[in-house]
Amino acid sequence: VVLRGHDGAVWGVVFSPDGKRVASAGEDGTVRVWDAAGGGDPVVLRGHEGTVYGVVFSPDGKRVASAGADATVRLWDAAGADVPVVLLGSQVVYGVAFSADGKWVASAGGDGTVRVWDAAGAGEPAGNPVELRYRRAMRDVALSPDGKWVASASTDGMVLIWKCDVCRPFEDVLTLAKQRSTRELTCAERGTFLHGPSCP
Image (cartoon, rainbow, N blue to C red; front, side):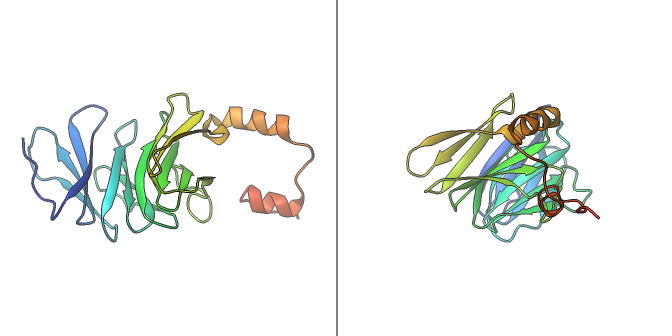
């Protein structure tokens, strides 16, 4: 089955969890979601400015995340029904991955940073990611099934495995925070770090 439509090279491809669809990442700045059997026209997701290097389905198959040369990760409705959530990095993004529970998205950037985002796009600016920094560009990223680790591929020939405490379920993160805290947050700190209103 040959799926035609991209204008230029195709940089990434992935099956949906149920195997019925294929998503592709193109040099033409589009993500296309195809019927894997070749039936009908693809859903064309437009918005990236420049090449799309990576694409992945969420575990439930309802969303698609894409990584672009425009320094963004975009979270799309796989059916093309909604405007995407745009997560902004600082340089080209080469790789993207969902966590097994679909709550987190990790991205691999040309600036040597792996970013772990809230897949709901929460925070201001959208996502407010945890950043894991290295000295060379990152080309790909993966999250472990238990959500505790992030693996990244670097251009210097290294595979790096990072511990990711924030990628655990919220209850685990809250327990960990209580174990590590030495004092209560000030009013100003609550406003800054919890992204909510500070004390009256």
